[in-house]
Image (cartoon, rainbow, N blue to C red; front, side, top):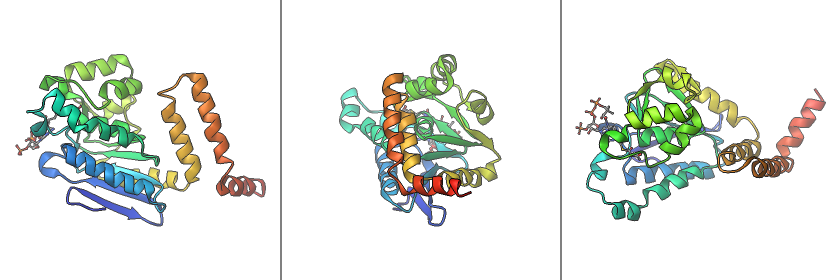
Length: 251
Ligand code: CAA
């Protein structure tokens, strides 16, 4: 699915897809309609059996500069509730295939939250991350106060959310917010390399593992271990498990 705001390219032999956010004039600001388009495109890729791993990226200048402030400025609590934008964020959480955010330029507010909802983040050297909502008299509303402390701990999360300051890709890497930092021109190449490696594994095992890791944030240890065991057993119902284990035994 291509729209002017979203470009999708699929590499059939590698079984990976790149979804590029393309609202450059607004630095990929996330209006309701744009976020909905992103979700619809991701949902289609999630159901596409020719795709095993998805890269989400923006432009050199911006991954996404946050929620669309023009659309938010006149909002009321009831208006926001009726719009149910946050239902869309919940939907994003349901994507089964691994999502890699390839971040260049600004990843701010909702843009930073969008990167954090992905399963891995690869940052270009020019990336800047931040939760500047506090400077607009609001606070993060799409997971920033929940996912950020889980990644970087309470102190750094407090600093980023309460001061609204931006941090560089190197600092984001240092505090555990991104997987790696690469030169700008290598961003897509590096993201594709990781995506290709993931996409070449057993689809079921990858999706079961992703689901289990995400559950670890919602469950206590015993409940999480039971969930992991269930998903682990499901892997034994796949051809790949049989093929790969036999191949190992046969050298
Ligand atoms: N919403 C709407 N438009 C935005 C935008 C946003 N979040 N961010 C940038 N833009 C628009 C600007 O209005 C500008 O449009 P015009 O050319 O029509 O004036 C264009 O993008 C380019 O922006 P700047 O001229 O400001 O570019 P800059 O290089 O000087 O600054 C920036 C870039 C630092 C990203 C700055 O634009 C900025 O601070 N943006 C807002 C970032 C922000 O506060 N994000 C949080 C939003 S709230 C949120 O996300 C809530 C939530 O948790 C879901």
